[in-house]
Amino acid sequence: MTQLTGLSGKRVLVTAGASGIGLSIAASFAMAGAKVCVCDNDATAVAGLDDEHADLQACVTDVSQAGQVEDLFNEIRSRFGGLDILVNNAGIGGPVGRLEKVPESEWVKTIEVNLLGAYYCCRQAIPLLDMAAGGSIVNLSSSAGLYGPPNRTPYVSSKWGLIGLTKSLAAELGERHIRVNAICPGSVEGERIDRIIAAEADLRGVDQNTVKEEFVDSSSMKVFIAKEDVAALVIFLCSEQGRYISGQAIGLDGNTEMKW
Image 1 (cartoon, helix red, strand yellow):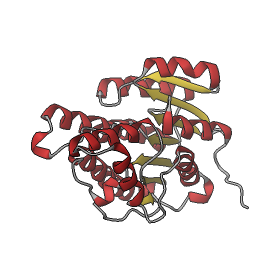
Image 2 (cartoon, one colour):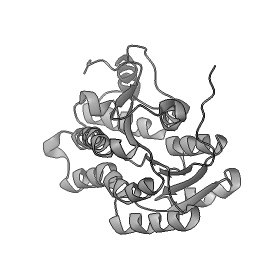
Image 3 (cartoon, helix red, strand yellow):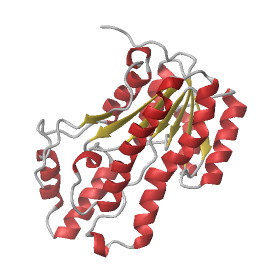
Image 4 (cartoon, one colour):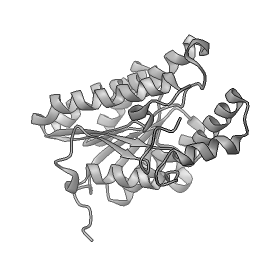
């Protein structure tokens, strides 16, 4: 089996990297020899990294706030002198409900975190990637950004937007040797999907197990995805072996089917 190469010494930023999928991605980069900084809006989770992940540097940042993102990248310049890889992992599930019932504030918040947060980070990262003579951006979209399930309009809109951002930005940056890809996971095991299942069950007045079975059944392979699977795909895309992959929205979902 070919071992992935080209990651040792790379300077990496993973947003929302203090727990869950982001932490799995960050830890995988660190194991590959990269210099990794994570940011997260959860100050407690950031502080807790010192215990088990002392190899990760961390900052408290809300990526939906442009000023905080600017401060984050000033810190990246100070600590690393530049950047080679940006992973836009930060995102929220948003509200579950019919469009006309969802409060405008929740719609706006979902777009601000999931889409504008990625924009703010890309805007700051591109000059540093240019200085490095190339690099990689990976945006965490979703299978919902490909298929559009009901009752999730803010989330779906933000994740479709991320795919559009990915494809357009890949076209802009290709000649500058910066590749841009999106990963579209299906249901990823963890607290977030549990909350979404609970909210969907409450909306429809059915048992949570019924909704979970429907989620599992929507995949041809009848699976939920592990966070380690997401991390492995991110690592591959940013490695030397992924050097010609750009502008792609890659499903990681066991083949989502339109069963809703």
